[in-house]
Figure 1: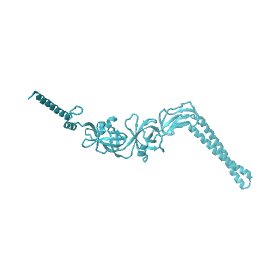
Figure 2: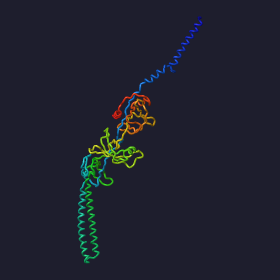
Figure 3: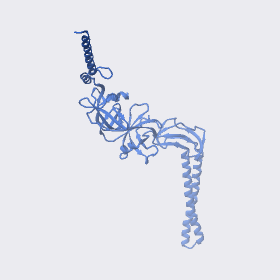
Figure 4: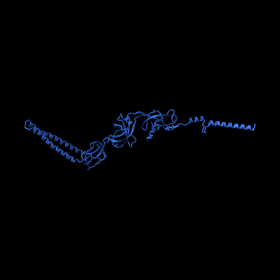
Length: 393
């Protein structure tokens, strides 16, 4: 074999070897220079771990739905105590902030001038009654004389008129005496209702007058029951108050986490405020211990009168898709399903789902943004009620 022929054979062998390498490279390497065998890629996809998420079963139970509002406490009765007669304050009969009963004396205005007026009116009445008695006697005598034509008609008429005039004067004198007694009684300023008094704005020795400029001596507010006034939205009015003026309500104070008192709605305003979209409501609460004071901030929740079945989830399970609300339901095969829902109000920390979910279904409550519909997940079971209690705590 010649040298030229041996070189040709060697060249052909090297070319064949490069062709084999190129064939392997084309089949086993991708465009970006990485080996991606089809069998290996499918196997990797099958063996990819499922996404870890927290899954909780929806809560389904009968509930009495309610809404919370803010309001202020108001006294059922509030009275500004003013003098009804002028004079000097002789005494004050209460301590600031004391509880008083209806009819208790609060102030005494010097009664001496008014007692003198009573005495004068009484004496005037006595004199008028004496003259009236004499006029009646003369009138009766004139009646007898007229029967025997022993008196002129003119004299007879004068005696009759005098008797009637005397009777009118007696009525006037009696009215004057009654007015004097009323003024005397007004020197005792009494509590018109039972309740708690404020401080005495004027003390002993001050002179008071009546009329448009009459001063306020003190204020008096009733203690029990106590009103709580608040504004409710249109939906709550239509759902709970339109057909049930006695809807149950609960009251909580600023230093309380819950609702310590139960009451009832006693009045709903006669119109809805178009500017705010609310209507004024007033509820009454027992205040026998006197701890509620007008003006205190009040948290009021208004509830329905009947329980209804409801499905509820924690707000962490709810996602937003443009204008829609949705949850991710985990089916029996641990695959995620997209479910559009209609939401209601909060109830005990959970969101009411009006439509879209059923009892017994499970939803993703942690990791909503990490999974997609149709994807299989590894769900860790958590308690839905525990989630809401943890937030409130």
